[in-house]
Image 1 (tube, rainbow, N blue to C red):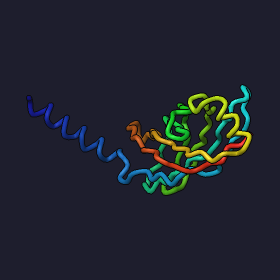
Image 2: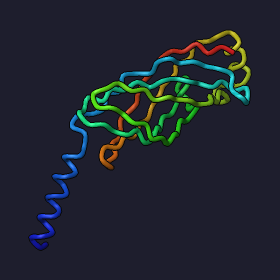
Image 3: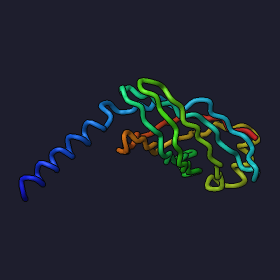
Length: 151
């Protein structure tokens, strides 16, 4: 390898490190969870994911990739592309919206439980992708809570 190529590779690596965030984005939790009847009469989950950017540089939120599990079974997938500006050293929220598919839980039991307002264990697992000067970073999302779903 020639000296010029080595010098270019080292310079490129240093530049990439300078552009990357110094600290990880912090996932703070899920709040404002609501379950509403959607257009297709399936329950629709609306929530806000909260994060904190401890870095001195701004970023852009590019993608949300979160699976919603109800009682341990995949019930919805949140796949959203976006261009949300994130200010330096600030908290920010990401809207989550998903139509819950409760057919995996059994139709008769699900209808009975929804009318009675049964508590379900809801998990959010996945990541959001942020970009800093063109470099993308995945921020993991992992949250679990009990939620009463009633129609």
